[in-house]
Image (tube, rainbow, N blue to C red):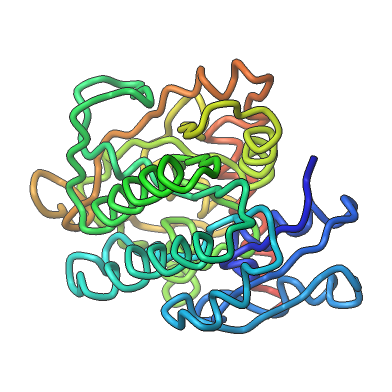
Length: 321
């Protein structure tokens, strides 16, 4: 049974969609967000809900974090810096916003003593470039090739140790590329922005052969909530993604089609380190999702359908703005 819960990054992309899904559950919810990337407009339609508390604060502020969790039983930790590209340029940002902030949140949960379940949005980036595709949760060794992936793996280790040491349940979700409305980063967002500036030519980072799994946001939220209901072990790890892949050139063509553009030329940069879009870019990613499927979930949309729907969503949103 869901009780009182706090969502870090609750005004962000995944967090606000999670809030939408929880709105009819009758639980008390605290949205904790520093609004660096989250937006109040994502959650404004919930503000009249008397069971919702919004707290603007940073996870690096231990006093505010402690106040945020002291009355809540379930923590959804979604706040992070999601930019893989930034991590190679300024590792300090990734460490502070991912590792240090997670440590503060775990410390607050430990001191409060009332947290029963801690859910964490990790990443497929923890696997690095695995030799096994699709990649299962028990794949080893975990060798992330980006600072971002390393910080997510560090967070997983901290969460696992705290769960075993202090007696709460931890559920870790290793996410593929999650896409949909309200997204503020990623390949689709970047392509739309570039084509707004130049509708005749689209720059594609890398050699164009990067191929990955994409999951639509509502499918992601359904899986997260199912994990909350059905996870049994002290620490559970679930891969969340689609069961197929799509390459970056196909994504580019879908974005062009959805924007109703004609005669757009594609300019491949060639990339770095063998055609990667940037340092730390994993060229081939597909997760084995049989573990979460065994609980009764499967994605409604495949990667191409998810990309098309997410592009439609984001183009529509940008027109409003």
